[in-house]
Figure 1 (tube, rainbow, N blue to C red):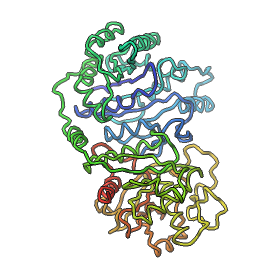
Figure 2 (cartoon, rainbow, N blue to C red):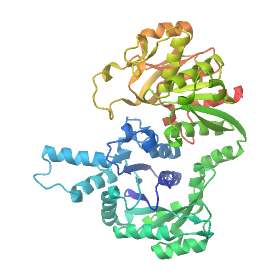
Figure 3 (cartoon, one colour):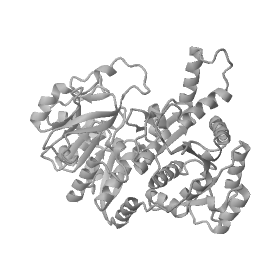
Length: 533
């Protein structure tokens, strides 16, 4: 069949969960046997979110081919298991840069470059994934922001044109909010009506409405929305608050969201797929009664800043039949005097990634405390580097040891900048990004965690590395370098074998953890935390 296109837009307010709905649609279509991809179009002018502070846009997710992207791509991968690439994340900045570069090259033959048709044509080309021979059955396109935003207007115009060109091969799913007014004891549909009216004013009639709500919507409310918005009743579904985001695909399936999409496109609906493996996972989640408390030592007091780490811990907990109760511990507040009280009750600690000097001394103090008290510790990227610095200061005796990132003049730069990074002046997209191979030392804790695999591949996002000049000293003192990149001899993983679980990874394992395949390092870490509890 021809590739079908599903456009997911949002109205009323942001943060309604378009990414979760898009990922859920992808999962439901996969369950029916279709080959699916999901892509995110973000209206901001940054080329990518790589230079954005997490407080601005949450976590920066990295694809296997090294693209820094929106955190929603993490939801796409965790739900569907697909590997996204740079083609799955597009911003206004990338669109305009492509068009301007072509104009400078003379590709438009003297034409006046305008938003319509040049910008919208480039958006359409990306939405259709022209030039990518992938054999996809469905392409799901989520557009960031909210209907009515100035920035999203070109994307809406592109969708309007594509709806006309593609006919029944395209559908629009619009997500809105139905607020509850406590004083009136009523759910209000007027914001949804206005949002749909604004969408219609742009020339787009939504085929399906997903109503985000904190309270169950009666059939009469759904019928009211259907009548006022020119949408079939069966195409008005509700997205209630769930105990877990992983319940959403099941809720959407029960309400027939995937069946409604199929009917709109003109595909026979057939039998409802069982999704047995997903239900098995949810059953494990419901049966996980014991709690294991994990401390996240970092500097970003924002849930979305460590989204993939949190989800990876949650998933690993479920598969270990426990609830991972995650506690954020601000590394800026940690001192030698209060570290014991700050980490009290934690069965394990994750020393979080990040950039810059703020909060690093607290991470170093936390790493020393967990090392000397044999508390399971997992350092990720900068977190691994802080474990290395702590060991140099307190075991090797280099009290002034540091990273060249934090102190370029340190006499003991146990963490140093990569050679190829020294002359880089552009900040965006120039780090060591994407998947790289890593050879594991047989017999190490890490080797066992990976199921005795000798060669793995993991995703990176950093400029600084373990300084191999000190490698022999570290190994002699008890910190082993158990993961090495075979191409560049870079240290990817360190561990202290004599500890129950003390491992640092230069890469980001959280990017590879999915609902049906939790990451082995997180699985092993949670197992160690359960035992220590």
